[in-house]
Image (cartoon, rainbow, N blue to C red; front, side, top):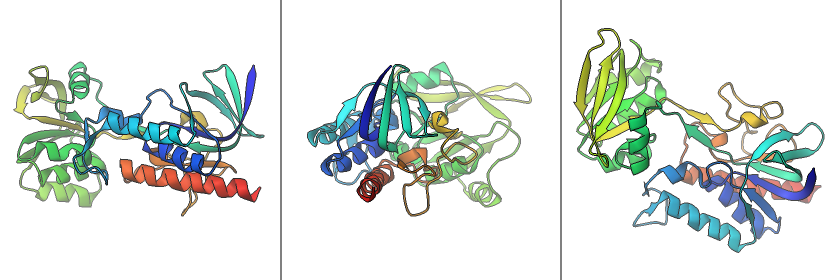
Length: 311
């Protein structure tokens, strides 16, 4: 099997990976970046990014990723298609690309991100792809539903937080909770229950996201106890049932919390393995914004550069 020696390997092509690449390339670290299964990451599923500093008119997610890629390439980043299928950090830092090529690295920056969990309905997928009303990020997309009625699914802290956020923008927010109680902390539950324009429906599941093929107009729901179907008018459907970090492949070697987020040493991007750094949503379940991911990408490249210099 072919093997290649790499000075700095960046895994993932979202804002974290590309920002790490820009810094690493300018520091003459000759970074190689593998784009992974979803080139451009989660931002490629967002139509408009309006909260990234420096874009007064806003920018589309995919367009922003193309610009970041060009910027990384301009400084000499070697950007490649393909994904990492296996790693072995027991001796040196070894990785396999598409099961057919081995990379031996001096430093690695993990920027594999996270994936939003969806309900898995055909109709949900359809409107997610048209950008016509399905979203997994209220902070990113809530603004587009100003003074409109929306539905949000989920019963945990982030669902409550997002419902509360939406309540300040939207005329009405309906929360669908599958069970007869919240998973969220008491303080978050109280916050949504006290908010006048949030209606909470327990024991309720989503049957279908309905619309005209482009834009969402209503949500068909079912009461899990009575089996009764009901249609709620809504132009936005928010899914807040959690994220899964794309980190499984590193699990035997890299320290993670119980949900799979990589644990970094406080105040740095270092992991428990020397020479391996983490940036972006693979380690961040709190903020999950493009700008914070980019910030940690910069930090990871600087940490990796210092690590190489100290050797």
